[in-house]
Image (cartoon, rainbow, N blue to C red; front, top):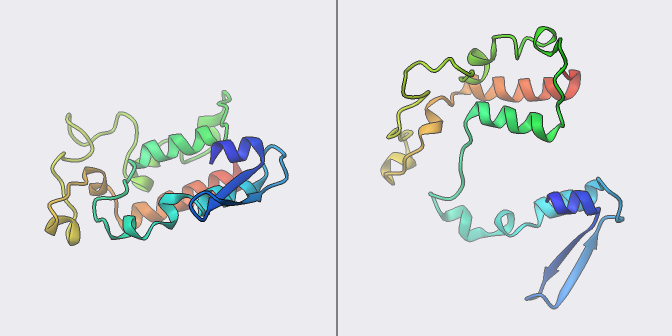
Length: 152
């Protein structure tokens, strides 16, 4: 995906590599090539992967926010922390985590946590999902949209 964004073009092969379709105009940041790279990726189109209950991963909320800020090329200013409430202390209540505010000396979640439902039945562990709730999911979405809309 990053290569498609940087080069501005994406070649999608099909028919066992015998045919291809080109997306994008060859300019840096072309969203047509980036969208095609995301939507036509093998992992996005594979039916087999959808049936596998152990496929995929859930990122910790704090790692997701930091990764998002890096991708948006965030540069800290002396007043960044004071201008935006998300960074000045309300992050733990909004997304379920904040740096240096773990509820235990061990971590934000227990290493053997398994969410109820098909994960528990399959004996699949997902410690990161212990901090995930409808409130933190909405808080994460609202916070990321706020970063895009209003900036820091």
